[in-house]
Image (cartoon, rainbow, N blue to C red):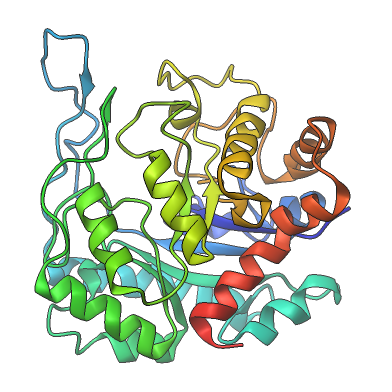
Length: 342
């Protein structure tokens, strides 16, 4: 079984997060099921909700499905909440259940040695960082190694893409001056900058800075599902040219051509998005970015324990063993090393 690195989960922010060690009957990811699925590493999201509203539909008569844009999040609230959530992962490391990645050697060690899996701390939306970036170095010292400037809401750094279908991601303005400063400082420290929730203007602003490989930790192909959160062919081409990758998301609404939030979604749709990206920009730029515990997963997958099923489906679709190894682990290892320093 190929060891797997997954690019995004929200297990730390679910109500039953305290059951991650023993098992979460109602969740997608926990440590026993990570072992069962061969998942030896994962990016754990630290996310603070805006407090409601973004799941409500905006009335429209043109057949477009749009959800209310999430309200801004106060920095003080986000900083307090994010510290608490990140503390949960630190406690797991303290008790010997995971090891938090600080350098690329931590991934290399966890891949084969049979010890605790490796966990990467990720801020999904940078509201916990002040616009002056005074908190960023402290977060780095605590283990922050991946950051999305925005979730799907606006903040001091950028404009998160709203949830609209069908729609391009070309909605709203790009990075602010503070957003550019944040991205540059992340590159100096060695923190990956994630484009998953950036709108198109923000994506191109970040690409223009040429700070490192462009990485979407949990996204899919707009050509197959015309959701605003998915990546256009032009964006995919830029990701490939930069040496980056797309962590293919498993969220059903971003896989299906009808945007349906439906468990009865075949895992073959994950394969279709992986194949599309691979054919467009190369297998070296395809990886996993599940969004476990943050979205509806295909029932046939089950949860993180279903990763061997997905690898089998990819193999049946024509991906060779060396390509499966790259998608499962090696591509993530390459881009993380590029951002962190090898």
